[in-house]
Length: 435
Image (cartoon, rainbow, N blue to C red; front, side, top):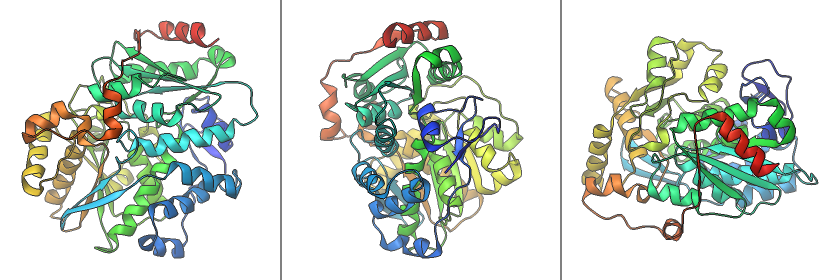
């Protein structure tokens, strides 16, 4: 399968080139030249298959032309051995728990799969691969865990100082080995800009083999599409139609859902639920995209003011704002509303949610209210609430038990290098450290 740039300037790339380069040379993002479809028989079987079985089918649709069957089967088996749970709270509200992996966030799916895919793609190559990743919270910890100890790959994680939760920071700064953390004196958008500048630096790329593990890399989105198909299979037992609310920051998770829908997965509508960083809701209203510096919120993984994956969304819809509006609704909610929803869900269902999931539920409620919709809705729950005790515990009035996979990081010593927001400083760091 070939991969095209959203800017339509670069020549089509192979899977290897698309994944290992991370971004096309023209500054766009890669998407499959054509999105494969599931057969009617496969769609009908979704309700009877396990998540792992669905993952094998969907992975083969994307990758079977490039990876031998046995290698691909092992890759999926060893990376997608994670639990996905659909929890029904009411007739109109279900929660898809995607946080049962090693770092307790949905990004474990993409990071684990990508690590194994990249490891396969660099076999026999003596040149070290350097992964640059900007994180607003969970991406960094998932990538650190997924790539830890992978031969031939070094990972450098950039995160905004003081703008990730303490548990997230410990997860991404205490791994050691081939994982390095840079604490940037800015926000997520500054981190993302530094990474993009490095990819656009032809001299640097001639001396370093660079790739990315952010959702700008197509290898992150392919495995995230798997649990949308799993959700559709589970929901078929309740209703032929349903909507999905996706807590959204950089919009990679939503893009993966859109890819799943284009494969034939029956999802009626998407809600892109954002915190006070509302550039996407404003884009849907006006048709004009106006990026701006991000604001800090308690749902920090969504603190993005210039979401990269908007370019993929626009490409998928041929930049037709009316078509985008027909499939996606979007609203923003502030921290006060987020806390209120955490409290409401706890009191009503004795169920604890994190701030990102709360934003997702707010978006679903808004959609159902405006459209007087009786369709059931699913909210993608992207992180375990124990990762955000400082935000959740005061609201529910209880201490959240810390799961063992999270507790192991909290006593470790942070190891991070401070970095300014100036690209020349970051470039010099890469030159001094890696060359």
